Each structure stands twice: as structure tokens, then as C-alpha cells.
Image 1 (tube, one colour):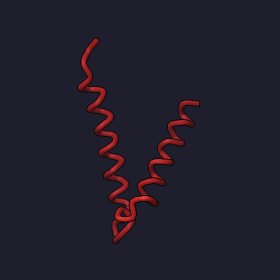
Image 2 (cartoon, one colour; image 1 turned 90 degrees about the horizontal axis):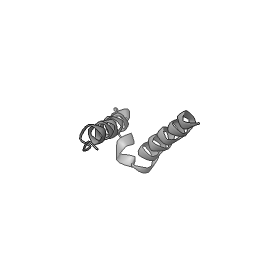
Image 3 (cartoon, one colour; image 1 turned 90 degrees about the vertical axis):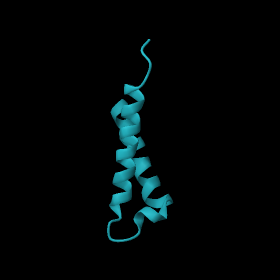
Image 4 (cartoon, helix red, strand yellow; image 1 turned 180 degrees about the horizontal axis):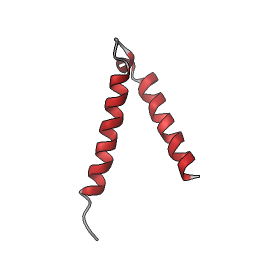
Length: 55
């Protein structure tokens, strides 16, 4: 179940970036904005885990 929920969340992020932010779909390299967003989001998640204070 968690894997299905993670897939659904990823699909929703993709749809939001592709459809609701029109600037990312313009030009020849339309996937560059989506890939950049995904990489930035992944970096943000990694930094959140790494920089968390120890308990």
C-alpha cells in the first residue's frame, strides 16, 4: 500500500508541474522544467533528513 500511495503522489506532482505551470511546457526542452523540479524536490528531501538534529 505505501508503494501505491508513493506512486500516486509522484503522478500528482507530475501532473501539477506539467499542466498547472505552463512555463515548464514551452519550448523544445519541455521536460527540463519537470526534471529540474523533481531533482530539486529530491535534494530538499535528502537535506531535510541529513540536517535533522539527532535525538
